[in-house]
Length: 138
Image (cartoon, rainbow, N blue to C red):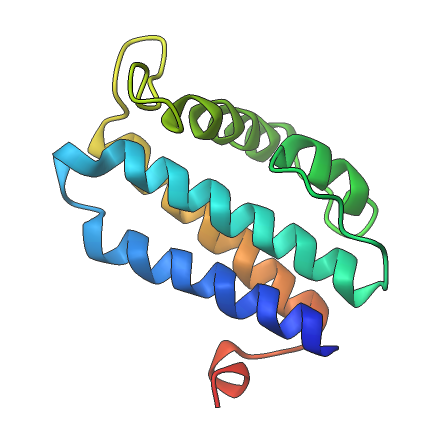
């Protein structure tokens, strides 16, 4: 793993830790969606850095995933979650929408699903890079 991959992984991990601190707070479910998206984005960028591919300055995790899809394919259920998180992230950046699902603000259960997905992508990325987060943080 190169230095750039390491920095992206550390940053992705910090987003996961943030989620863990706010996950049960019903007021902050849209913030969970935001940090889940951020963690996904950073994991995908870690994979690109590992392959020495120039990292595009974009935040669209759907587009970033397409760049690493050959090493991290997703089944349709997981791809569906990626698309939801991507849309919520875009909306969460604007206070008038605050990251709403069609039926309103994400529930705590939605937030838990987003966290589980982001954790899955993080762990899959670490496995691909053959690293343990404990070793990276030293």
